[in-house]
Image 1 (cartoon, rainbow, N blue to C red):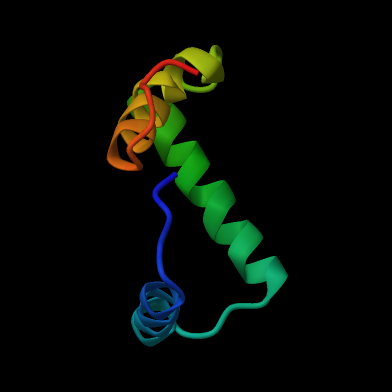
Image 2 (image 1 turned 60 degrees about the vertical axis):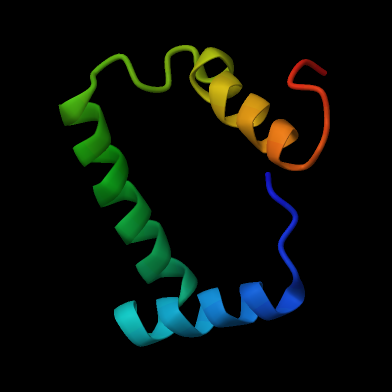
Length: 71
């Protein structure tokens, strides 16, 4: 993941709250479940090999943070 300054995290949190409203854990879990069901309907293979699915994202994040793409 990219290293984000605290101010960026603060801005993102404020934006998310303004956009979606405050959520408790149950509401967040319901939202995640709905999004996961939608993701599976779009790509039934999703989650079967999660390490392979996130490998390009990890390589990009490592590169953006000045590290070698391969760990």
